[in-house]
Structures are given as structure tokens and as C-alpha cells.
Image 1: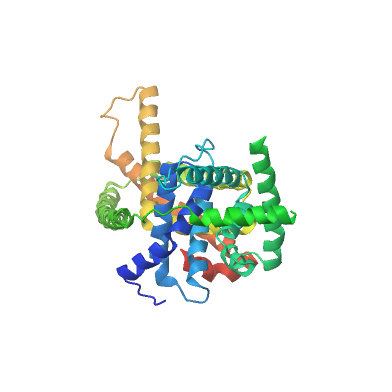
Image 2: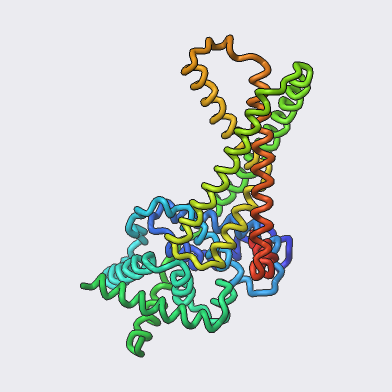
Length: 169
Length: 200
């Protein structure tokens, strides 16, 4: 990655990682309007930060690191407004398999609701786990040591399981 | 976590990664970047204008030989700046405890927050805010003590209020600089400083 990234390169990069970054935003903010705002904040930070990218880490972990920093800042800013709405993000229904789609969507919504109740660091780790990051990559994104990633991730998984079970009751 | 739970999580992970097929809204991002740039240009121009006015008033004030009222307002400016900084720090400490953010993330947040506070535009914003507060105190005092406005508004007191902005801004800026130095002097943050600089 060069220091002077041009617009087509940036667009290509964002298209590649947009889904993941959007999910990161969703894990920090339940309100769809604020979620979109947060995503735009993340994209803006990425645009400004890419000039400083030294290519010492992979571009993927770099982008997620920015996204998580932005997310944490967003939570700190919004902390006075604790009444966030429940997840209302609606995807276009896949008409070929409507029932399966709705079920999948409900599962993801339940998952997101549980994620929103986790402490920040656990939230970060569980989202990275769901995105398929390795322990090493998670350590790069969060700045934790690899063994701490393992401990915290296990805690996060247990908390998530308990929260989702509570939802079922 | 047993194997069954791990499998369920892996399935959830697959479904998670399949969600969101929306196209990125790059048009909004472009609009936002252009707007931010225009805002910065506007703020810079207003900075130049206000600095010019302040310099002119300083010159006029010098000619008018002001002294006492200025000193009292400088005092107010210093106290107000100090109180604002302390309250702001307490608020963010409180935010940290509520969010259960880990120490490192919080320090990074604080570091970047203080860094962004050092911009000239923010300096101006807080200066104008302080002026607003002082102006209202002044009006209220005038009302309570039955001073006839606008007769009570002489040029000297106006200079004093305006200069209190400058003093407050300078003090506030110094306070933030000291705080930033303190933050980056924390050993492991210092080690990571270049990373934070890279991120923001």
C-alpha cells in the first residue's frame, strides 16, 4: 500500500471490506441512523489514516483497528444516551428462500442484541472472532497480547452464550 | 464452552459473515469530506478575522489605558478554564467506568481526544463559548445591580471581556498540552504513541 492512495483504490478497498466494517459499526451501535453515522465516521477516519499506513501490519487488521477505535470512541461519546434502540436493521428479503432468510436474520439480530450487552473489549474480540480473525490478528487489532486475547475471548464466548440463553427463556 | 457450543458459534460466524450485502455509500462520504474541508476553510478565515479584530481592540485598549477590570476577568478566565478541564476529565473518567473500556483503549481515546482539542478551531470555539458565558454574567450583573444599559457598557469593560477570551484560551490550551504530555509519558502508551499517531 502506497502512501498516496487514490480514489479508485480507496473505493476498491472499501468495497472489499465494507461488509465487515458495517458489522463492526452494528456491534457498537444498535440505532440504525447512528450506526450509519458511525460507519461514515469509520470510513472518514480510514480515508485520512491511509496516508499514514506504514504497511507493517496487514491492511485488513489496520482497517479493523481504526474501526474499533472509532467504535470505542463512539460508545464513550454516546454513553450518556444509554437508551439505544433495539436493532432495527432490515435487509432486503431473499425471495427465493424467504423462511430461511427470516430465520437467519432473526438469529443475527439476537446475536447483535447479545453483543451489545458485552463489555467493550469482549465485544471487540467476539466481533473479530465472528469475522474469522486469527488470535494473532485479533492481538494486532486490539493491542492485547495473544494469550490475553485467548482468555478474554473465552470469557466473551461464555458471556455471549449465557446472554443468548437468557433471550431464549 | 464445550464442542457443541463451539460448533454453534462457528455456524453463527458463517451466517454473520454472510450478512450485509449493501453497497458502501461513498457519495455521502465524499460529501462529508468536502463539507469538512469547507468548514475548516471557513473556520480558518473566521480565525484570521477575529484575530485581526482582537489585535485592533488590543491597540485601542492600550490607548485607553485599561487595567483593573481586565485583571478581574483574567482571574475569572483562569478559574473557568481550570474548572472546565477538571469537569471534562471527570466526565470522561465516568464514561470509561460505565463502558468497561480497558485501560489502553481509554488512554488511546483520551490521547486522541486531547490531541484533537489542541486544534486552533477548538481553541476558538471554547474562547467564544467562554465569551458567551461571561457576557451573560455581565448582563445579569447589570440587571441585578440596576445598571443602565447601554450606558454601563463602556469601551474599557468591553476590552476586558474580549481579553478574557484570549487569556482563557491560552490557559486552556496550556492545560491540554500538559495533560497530553502526562498521557504520553505513561510508559506503554509512549511506546505505542507512534501507532496512535498513525491511526489518527
